[in-house]
Length: 496
Image 1: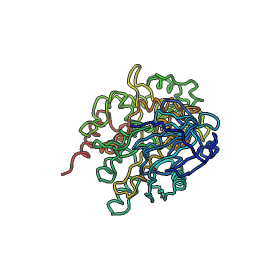
Image 2 (image 1 turned 60 degrees about the vertical axis):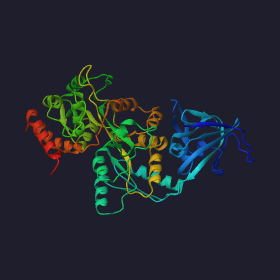
Image 3 (image 1 turned 120 degrees about the vertical axis):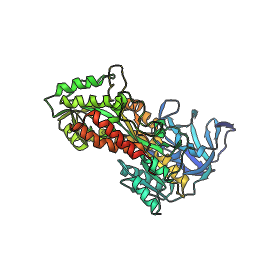
Image 4 (image 1 turned 180 degrees about the vertical axis):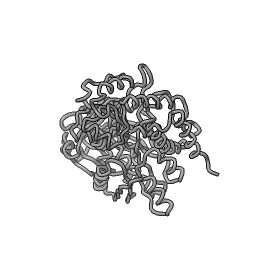
């Protein structure tokens, strides 16, 4: 339990002005800043009581700590102290915030001490050093820059490598007896093979804190958590505002979208365009047409059912009407950028790309399948940091992951790359001036996580082939789904 201790006013020979924040570690001064806002880079912070302030976390101010049990805060009113055995774990979610010109408050949980003049943290600095991190997907250069900054600031050696496929590389290196990374960025469907291969550490002991619950769900397998969620992409409907000049209402349906597409028929190459062959876009329609869960309790995935058939028939109807054309990413983006496609389904990662191109576009969450019906629920594609089972620096790996998932970097990284930060407080703090915020929030609320299950890659690869045959007219729905089910079952059947 956290405990505020009222201590007699501290007499200190070192005079500290109201505009200065003096930082101490075990009584020794580590920083004296007379302009924290200028030198420490204050940014918007969402506080636990729901309010917003300008500030930064204590984790950004202090060295990485192996343990911390007490922080003493001196104000004009005297000295107060917070005591807790897990302070080292909470430094990145405890804040120094600006409450007036040159005036700073300490916020730990829902406790707030105003007018701080000095802080003294009691604990043990982390001796571990020498961390290797493997990175992939978008934003590698931005993460590398942050890791270099952390290494310099904290006095640690951190090596960051870009790896095209962290799963296959980790499996190959482990089989060959090579050195595995201490910290590795993975996606949810990597979990079964990596955790099953005893390559990852369980992270059940970590407090969820400010991180989104769906993010931990995305990395849960065999009843354990295997990664710290970092960011996620959500699918959205993008539309050309020159072609579709009125905004979509909040409760619009698939039929409404069809009507809008019909108004563009003959005027553009494809009123609607997305990758019909990808399970990434099939799953949302399966959900909208009644699917309760993608992966069954026995670990299988069912596709030869009436709900999947209804979803595919609805998509086939749009294709037959000349309203929807299959397009893989490059073609879809090209058509949208040149005004040849009115509405496309893409991930939030397209927002900065389309913004840089200067396109006239807006976004909306996916539609309802029918009036008053279920939402077509987008997939939420999480990336997260996993700790290697073989790491010799587990606490350093954890502290770096905490730094990368803290509000400061989460907010900067996500806004620059069109990602949704796994840190919900960082997402709240980014609301002001963010025109995409509400659509992304709704998508996150209704979205389904890419499941951390062996069946998902099998399902994804099978449907890629079957859907090509279906939408090219070589198979009917009645033929395609039983064929897909047989392939999925055969690939999931235990081999003797």
